[in-house]
Structures are given as C-alpha cells and as structure tokens.
Length: 212
Image 1 (tube, rainbow, N blue to C red):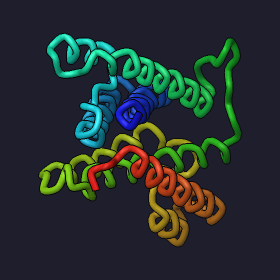
Image 2 (tube, helix red, strand yellow; image 1 turned 180 degrees about the vertical axis):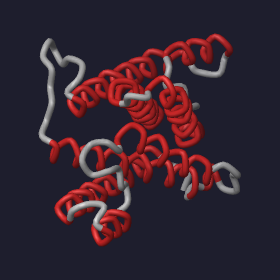
Image 3 (cartoon, one colour; image 1 turned 90 degrees about the vertical axis):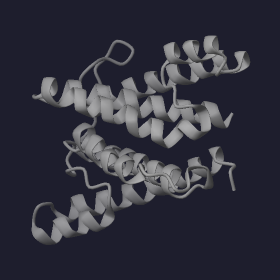
C-alpha cells in the first residue's frame, strides 16, 4: 500500500505541474520543459527509495519486463498513477478555470485558488524534505539540496500565480507582508494553508515510510 500511495502522490504532482504550467503560463514553451523535467526529478528523488519512482505506466511495464517490478504490483501501480493524473487534471482545471471537469469548466474564487495552491506547494516541499533529508534510507545522499531547491522552483512555476504569490513558507508570507509585496490577508491565508500542507505531508510521510 505504501508504494502505491507514493506512486499516486508523485504522479499527481508531476501531472499538476504539467497542467498548470502549460495552461497557465504565457511563456509555456520556454518554462514548461524545465518545470516538467524538474517535477519528475524531485518526485523520483522523493519516492524512488520506496516505490522506484515510476509515475508512468509505461515505465512500470518496462520495469516489470526487466524483472524489477513484481507482477502483482503492476496493475495497482498503473491504477495509482492514473488516479493521480486524473485528480491532478481536475485540480489544475479548477485552479485555472481552464479545461473541463465532466463537461463543465470550473473556476473558484481567488481566495480558494490561493489557499489550495499554497497548501499543495507546501505539501510538495515538506514531502520532498522529509523523504530526501530525514530518512535512514536516503542518509548521506548528495542530492537533497538540489531536490528541495528545485521543488520550490517547480511549485513557483506551477502554483505561484494564484493570488498569494507562491510563498510555501510562513516566514516568507510574513516577510512579504511587512515589505508591502503582499497584503496581510493574503499572508494569513498563506500561513494557514502552509501549516495544513506541512502537517498533511508529515502524515503522508509517516504512512509510507517504514525505514525507522
């Protein structure tokens, strides 16, 4: 079950970045390849030690044929990946007001979109930090700084344009409010969303990591 949850979460964020960057960025042709490739990189770093970091039914098939993935895992891996992709498509369409959900376009208020973007961005950042920098199975790795830094890059590309500016950090939210870059209402929204996102990431990490 732990491996399948990792595949679901990794595929969700991978596809969410694709949907939000490609549909929500005027310079998508320039930034999309970097953001998409980086999204895959950070999720492989974060989940590879648990599930192999496939996030792709084709990769799962190839791993199975090579003998690197048990036959019993193949269908559930693929289902987890597809469900993650579908949820990401729905969330992305809802945030952007672009794309369709069951035949209708969805677009929430700026407050809801900003809160959701902050929560998801903080979840992704905390998830990668916990998986790459706090576990025995990744102890001594030389990549966690790269993975964590690029998580911020990717989430800023994908989720930074939804009202709050993409803080993913309560300290940044407070600093930008003091500086006048953001209002206190926006900062408060970011802080609450960040706390919830971080807590959810910790719960998800504890659910999938059994190395300690």
